[in-house]
Amino acid sequence: MKLLHPLQLTFLLLALPLTVAAQNNRPAAGTPALPEPPGTARVAENLFMDEAEVANLHWLEYLHFIRRDSALAFYRTQLPDSTGWQPVPDPEQATPPQSYFRAPAYRFHPATGITYEQARAYCHWRSVMVNKGYFQGAEFRKQHPELRDYDVTVEYRLPTEAEWTQAAAGNLPPGPRPFELVQTRSIRKPRPQKLAEYEDLVACLDAQHLAHPATETAYELPYNLRENFYLAGSNQVFYCAPVKEKFPLQSTTIGPPNGFGLQNIIGNVAEMTATKGLAKGGSFKTSVTELKLDSRQAYQGPQNWLGFRCIASVRMTKKAGK
Image (cartoon, rainbow, N blue to C red):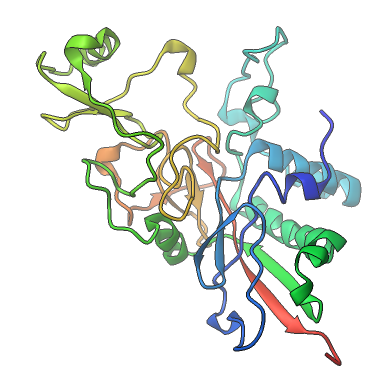
């Protein structure tokens, strides 16, 4: 696969982010507004977060550049743990199974098998690349002539637990429906599915030995967790999906966003925080009945259910003599 230039990938696909870092990073009165990196969502003043989890494609990009610019020994330390998933076939091509990380069909699925130290190294590398290739680039200066007298830099990092929780809430209360931990911008109105009309749902309930009166109605949950449906009458949660969709992870760009525009902030993969061993948001292995916004997921080392997204802060300083 031909990897794109970082300006094409890191800046346009990943939705680069910014941190709350010090409140003293607020722009002074009379200075231009802080520029927002492409693809990020502003969650507070000078606090921006990736709209999506870091994907396999972005980690491949990272490896491409550090293999070119760094020692081979360091490059090898940044390879993800590939033992978390069995080799997966490409549903669109008759090719031998590949690792989940490298299979083209999963380019936009979340990067997993990543250690805390690797995630931090990625954030540091990304800061260097964005500052050098984007904020100092001619295109950025052309789009922001008001910043010609300023040096603009950004520093990426893992979010603190408090920052992650603030971003996940989306500045909204929990949703009105059962198990709606975070309100989402509905792509479509939740559709009631009467069991009497959906044999596949009945088959799933039967296979899991769950009671289901014929008059029950099911609703789909908006998150990629252990369960993806609930019964309106009993609040019984369960999982049901076609065989072809059994792979538990989904693309980082699928699913309704929260109030800030963040996708998969709940479920898919749990997300690392700045505290080593502490993740947030739950994953495809987490039951919705056990998850709250303040819930924590502990981890040791790389996991197939663990990923991350970045947060970062922008700093503007007046150029000397300006």
